[in-house]
Length: 159
Image (cartoon, rainbow, N blue to C red; front, side):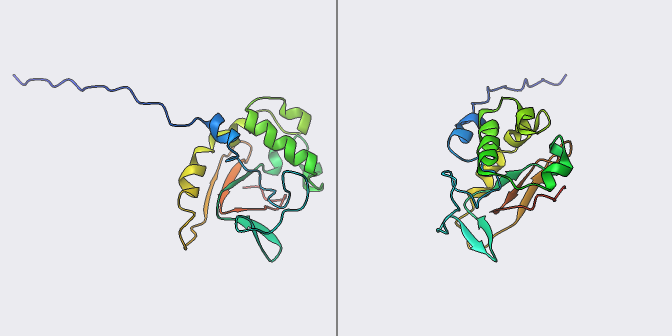
């Protein structure tokens, strides 16, 4: 008879930081890099640059909601995102809860954006390399996506 070896199960240690910690640390960035936190136009620094007037950064990725994530996609595509809306979207995603409907978004999109946050650490950890590898991840239900290097996205794009 063969001796059976029982697998030894070890508890998995918790991650060093949670998604909530990452959101508090500013790792969850909405695609509007052209708007600073104080509501002014972003300055071109070593962390955010512009190429043909498109703001981008290789220091982090950005997330964006596709038009279908909005209750009225046509209105969203034909509007200009205001500084107040950009701040409210980031606050909604960073908090992880709240009423998405007050911003005109469908329920659950903030959870999709938070779900993709752990890839930010993997992608931005390689930001010091000279070569830039473009990366993209998206979720099908509402079209929430994250892209690296972070760049301002057109409102019409629906993956």
